[in-house]
Length: 280
Image (cartoon, rainbow, N blue to C red; front, side, top):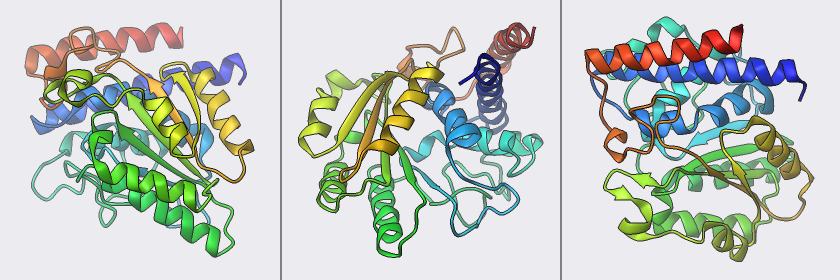
């Protein structure tokens, strides 16, 4: 990517993070930590990688994205809003009664959401089904799904991986957000999923391990995915939970709670400073 493209994506990722804080603060609930760690991949997918049309969210030939770790809906919503699927001004209505932006993605109410998710492990299974359907109907669209590292403790994830390999789904890209923390603490202490890369390779995937905050590294991985034939591709992203907000970074406590007034002000001030620096 050019230096200008990279700068614009960094600016957008910062705006996505601001949307995460705005929405969880507005809801007085939600999951900021894992939304912030995935800001770059949300941005890269929706602003560079995927073939989509915000004016036609149900376009039959679009690429599909399934947020398997559905609790990080604030990050997905912020990306969708900034991409033009719905107004950014609606983000603070997250989880409000009668809001279309509920705590987990709802494909029936939110433009741009391809699958309703929330029960961990089920999103990747749906993505496998979407990729199989595309294969069998001769479609050339690609399917992407994002999982949490705590989520891959679910057995259903590995059944889906086994199916993806068995059916040679080279139109499927599985992304694991390895921020190292889940609601109960360090993933290695709760139920270690390591070594993640080796497990995926053993299940028949080609795998790239990258810094999930490095847009150029993400670009290289997604481009590599398109060259792989006869097997599914996985990207294991090493990330920082709560990335971009100093007091949220690497703190499992921010897995599922909203900032209070003072925390909201501090978080937004930090992100506005980052945005100003990027736009300078």
